[in-house]
Length: 469
Picture 1: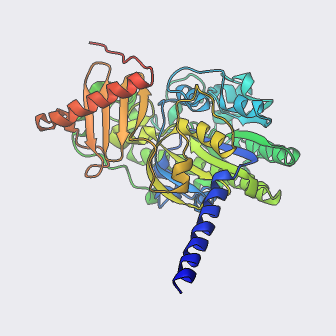
Picture 2: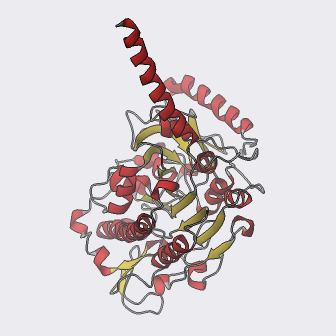
C-alpha cells in the first residue's frame, strides 16, 4: 500500500510538472496590442467603476490577467509611448518593440496612434505624428473631423453650447480640453471606428502568419466626440462630483499642481459642466470600448484566440476634477495609474496587485513569444506574475515628469520635485492622497528612506536627477 501511495504521489507531481512545463514552454504566435489614450484605470467597470459601461474591456478582463497597480513612466503621451515602445525610462534605442518582432519573423503593423500624434491636429490632417518607421512594415492613420464634427458642440469651461461649426476650439487653441461633441450618427465616421475596421482587415489578411498588430485608439482624449446614443447613457443627474476636501491644495507643493485647476479655470464656476465633462469622458470610453469589442470578436471568428496574446492598456491616466486638477502631466495617482489587461493562451485569468510599469509590456510579450529580449530593455517580464498572481517583479514603479519623479510601492506614493519639495502618502489609509505626510516632521525617517530609494533607482536607470533651487 505504501508503494502504491508513493507511486500516486509521483504521478500527481509528474502531471503538475508537465502542466507547468507546458505553460512555461507555450509560445504565442500573434500579438494584438490595444492602446487607449488618456484613459484612467479607475473608470473601467473591471476596475471598479459602477457608472461607466465597458462590457468588452470587462469581457477581456474576465479572460485575462488584470493588473491593478500599473504606472506609466511618462505623464504625457509622447514620453510615455516612447518609453513603453522601447522599454526604457528615457530616450530610445534601435530595438523598439515592433522592430524586435519584425527581426524575429513577425508582420508588424500600426493602426492609429501608437507613438505620439497631436490630438486633434494629426487626426484632422491624417498625418503620422512622431512615428518611428522601423517599428512597422505597414502603418495606417485614422483621420476624423474631431471638434469640427457637425452636432452639439460644448466648450464646458466657457459654458458655450452651439451647433455652429464656426469658432470651435480645436488644435493648439486654449480651452480645447473642455470640448465635447454629441452628434447623430453610428460612429463609423470617427477615428476609433476606422482603427477597428482596419485592424479587423489586417487580422483577416494576416491570420496565417505571425503578426504583431498595434491598434491605437484616441478616445477618451479630448475633444470627447461620440454619437448621441453614448452620451444618452450618462445623464448628469446620475454623475457625482469628485470629492475634494476643503483646503485640499494646501499641502500639495505648487510645483506638483496640474496645469489646469478648477480654482483658477472657469470650469470651477459650473458644477453641472464638471458632470458633463465626466459624461463626455464616459461616453467616449464606452464608444471606444465598442471598437475594442469589434476587434476581439473578429479574433474569435478567425479562431486566433488560442494563439494570440492580447494586451489592453493606456498611455497615462487623467484628472477630471480630483484635487481640482484637470488633464495629466503631474505625479498623482489619477494621472499615473493606468489599466493593463493581458490575455494569453496557457495562463489562467485572475487579478494581481503586483507593482507594474508600462514598459514591462515589451519584455513580457517577447518572453511569451519565446524570443530573446534585447539587452537595451529596462523593463521586466511579467510572466512570473501571470503564472502566480501573488508573485512580484519589482518593489516600486518609477514615473518621470518635467517637475520631478515618483516612486509608487504597494503601500506608499512618494514624489520628489526638482526643487526638492516632496509628497508622501500612505495609500492604505489615504488612497485619495488627501494628507501629504512629507510636511509632517514625524515622518522624516520614512522620507530619508524614500530619498535613498529614489536616488538608487535613478542611478540604476542611468538617470541624473534634475535639481532646481
